[in-house]
Image (cartoon, rainbow, N blue to C red; front, top):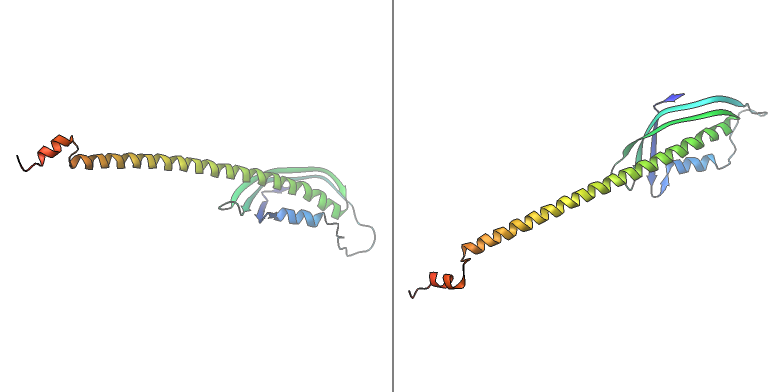
Length: 160
């Protein structure tokens, strides 16, 4: 059992660290052993990893995002050590990638929502500014003779 492990999930230029790890695990490269002869087999009843958390670092996000990756449980494993590592890592990587993708979508959705709210506030502010400017122009116009043309002329006619 493992509790509270921390994972760093990075995505730069379309390549993630979990892609690199999965490629290495699935490469089929032989594992170096120190002894010749039969490899031991490991029997594992349960693997439980609880409360996996991590940071999602993606070049499409303005800053890292902390994510909860949940729990992972694997049952009844009977393999040689190299196969066991592959069998354990595959679902871990899969869950990390799935949860990281969910977190990325959630963060992007949140940013879009905030952007829409900011755009609405900008539009409302611009409308208020236009109204205030229009009112100010009307007041300035009234200061300089906002009445009818006849009144303006008689008010400034020096012949009367």
